Image (tube, rainbow, N blue to C red; front, side):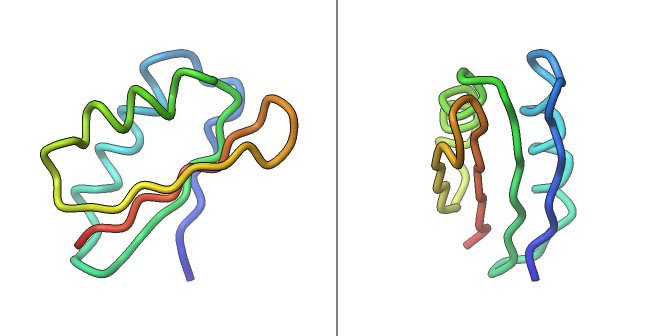
Length: 73
């Protein structure tokens, strides 16, 4: 089961910082999900993680709410 991190109401760069913290804790093959209401969080996370071996999936679950899943490879 993937850990969920609630970032609703967090201002930039908090979702990115929380993603970086959690990424350091997980092992290869594990994943976690961030829930955020910041439209820029997806692009910020993709940019920051571009050199990491991971898969990032994102979807707008409902208007203004994004679910970003990061899986470490």
